[in-house]
Structures are given as structure tokens and as C-alpha cells.
Length: 367
Ligand code: GLA
Image 1 (cartoon, rainbow, N blue to C red):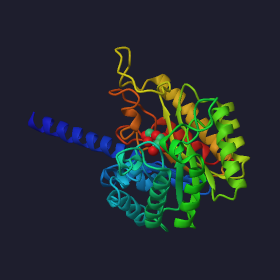
Image 2 (image 1 turned 180 degrees about the vertical axis):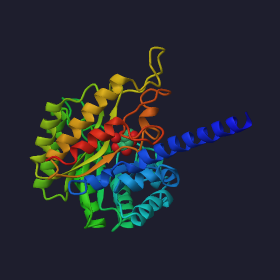
Image 3 (image 1 turned 180 degrees about the horizontal axis):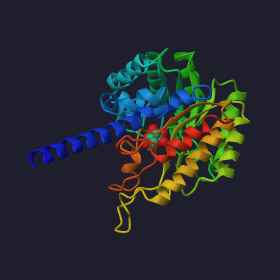
């Protein structure tokens, strides 16, 4: 009896060890995305400094050869007070990228969101003057782009300046209101002076909307005609499985490629919920956790389609960055519905590859 139960325990342990080994093997034997796509474009992820001390590093090291700071290079965090910069976060990402032979994208020098309170305030407590705001922008750009010279190879110089409203060209921001549109060419010129080697990008979302796209293209074309140093367009690509259509994506890449500028896919994710522009409260009808068969099937098909298109345009696309490493890390778990989870990436909450991962792998051999 004793012998029998001992044998049973041993067999169960062996079975358990085989199952555990299988799980590890599954993650270890899958191909490296970065390696598969090495002749086409870099494969990047946005990270926070704490990601670099977490178990997610095994995914980063294996699959990704480019990093973007998710938040720590934005004005509010890197330059919280006049004259005080917090380099700790970006420095740790720069060091990690260097240690692992990865590229480092700078995100972002100028954006009207996540700005520090002091930036738009004058010494009298009122709105800052035009001259003073331009001086502050110049100093900021020289300090940040100057510090990461030789470490950041490409900068998102300006983020999201074009309006979503079809009847309006620029988004109304304090930069536009106070400085007028000339600030746009200035920030590119200063970034180029601060780091003449860096590739400079204009970065925006809703790139598949033909009206917004036309405006983006018009703006960058005007900048180039004026001799402003701008090397590429960053397409954020925050998409949903319910809205992205192949014809729309094709038109988008075709039009941007025709500008002759380099393209970076800067913030790719594919939500399993319909896109919603505003934050809203959780509703009882929200299915907060499910990653259903329907989600998986749609996501597989659309990730396959996305990478088929990226590969087709790989002569102009130099880099494809996912916004976050895995579903566990995604910003969409909290946005736009607090308390609802999303599943927008190729690795699940346990850092295991999803079926969409295989669909992306399958496209690497095509042209
Ligand atoms: C925009 C910004 C990113 C990030 C995402 C949401 O796309 O460019 O830095 O804030 O929104 O996380």
C-alpha cells in the first residue's frame, strides 16, 4: 500500500515536472520576433524603468531590439520644475538598451499633454509670454536631446499637433495659442541643432482617417519645403479589432510612403474593445475580463493583416514598436474604462505568446 502511494506520488511529480518544463519550453522554443524581422524593421516595445527589473525582461531580451520610454521622457516627468531634470528613468532605459544592443527611440520632446504645470505660467502667475515659452522650449530640447545625443537614434520631436476635427487644421493647444504655428518648425530646428545625428519624427494617431492623414502630410510637406529638418513620420497605430480595415491600412501606408519620408510605427496595439475616445465609467454590461474565442480569432486575423502590410512597405518602415510588452503591462487595462481589462498585444498576462504571435511570425518570410 505504502509502496503504491509512493509510486503514485513519484509519477505525479514526474508528470508535473514535464508539464512545467513544457510551459517553459513553449516560451523558450518560439522564434525571436526581432531576429525574424531583422532584415525588415526593428521590433520595439515601450517600457517603464520597473519593467527592466521584472520577469518581462526575458521577453524583451528575446524578442525586442528597440525600446521607447512609455512615460519617463515626457516633459512633466523629465522636467518637473524649472531648471530641474529627472534623468534617472531615461538613463536606466538608455543603459539597458546599450547593454543589450538595442536601439533607443526618444519619446517625446514636445507634446501638449503630460506637461508640467509651470511651463505655461509666467513669473506674475499669468500666462507665459510667447518669447518666454519659446525660450523654455528651446532650453528643454537642448537639455534633453543634448543629454541623449549618441544614445537616442530617433526622436518624436512633436506629438499630436494635428486636429481630429475635419474642419480644423491644428489641435488647439497652449503651444499654438501662445506661440503660433511657427513653434512647430522651431522645435525641429532646435532638435537638429541639439543632436545633428538623430532622426527626427512627427508622431500622431488616427493615421488611417483620410482627412487627418491629408493634414499630417500637408504639414510635413510644408516643413520640408521650408528646409526644416524632419526625417520621418511616426504612426502611432492604436487600433481596435472592430475598426481596422485592410483597404484603409493599405491607403494609409501608400499615402505616407509617397511622402518619401521614413515611417516608424511607434505605438502599436490592437484593442479587443471598440475604440472610444473619452474616458467613461464601467457599466454592468461591460465584460471586464473575457478574452473570448471571437476576440482571439479577430485579433489573429488582423495582426496577420497588419504585418502583411508592414512587410509590404518594409522598404520605408524602419521600426515597429508595440505600446507595452504584454497584455499584463498594457495602458489599455485602465483606459478608457477603469477596471476593464484589455488584451491588445502578442503576449498574454502570463507572458506567454498568444495565437496572434504565430500570425505575426508567419508574415516574416513574405514580401
Ligand atoms: C499617446 C502618446 C503616448 C501614450 C499613449 C497612451 O499615444 O503618444 O505617449 O501616452 O497616448 O498611453
